[in-house]
Image (cartoon, rainbow, N blue to C red; front, side, top):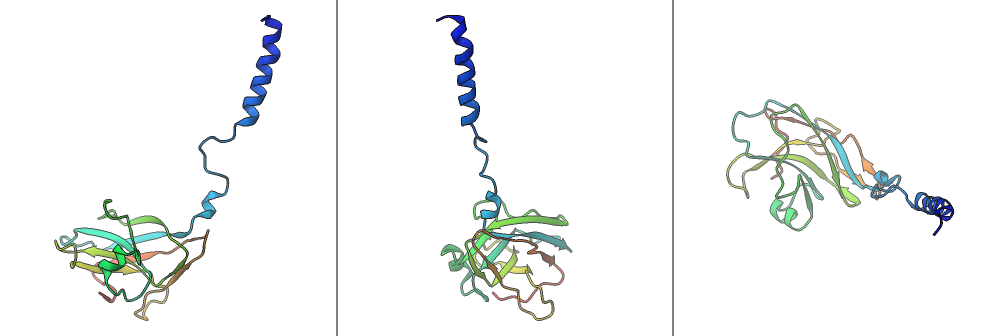
Length: 166
C-alpha cells in the first residue's frame, strides 16, 4: 500500500471515529430530572451523650405506622441509608440526603434513633417533616414520577422530641 493512500484512509477513519462517539458512559442529558424522590437537609441540636446506637431516615406510607418491622420488611417503609449500610452521620450540625422513591403519597417522614441494644424495640422518633408546627401531626408528601421534591427539611432536637407514634 502506498503512502498516498494512508492519508485519506486515516482521515476517513478519524472522521468515522469522531462522529460515532458520544459521551461514553455519561448519563443521558436531563437524566437528573427523571429521578423520583425527596431531597433535603437534617439539622441537629442537643446530641445525647449516650444512647445513640443508630440513626436513620425512615419514610412510611401510612401514619401512624402499623408495624414498623413489617412495614420495613414488606416495602411499606423506606429506610435511608439502606439496611446493612452505616446509619446517618452523628454529632454534626447538618447532613443532606437524597432518597429515590416510587411515586405515591408518604404520610410520615421521620428521623429515627435506636437508643438501646434491642434492634426490634429500642427506636424513637427524634425529628419529623412537619410544615405546620404545633398541630402535632407530620406533613405528608406526594412524589410524582420523574420529580424530585426538594426542601424536605427536618429539624432534630434531642431535648424536644416529636410525638411518638410507635
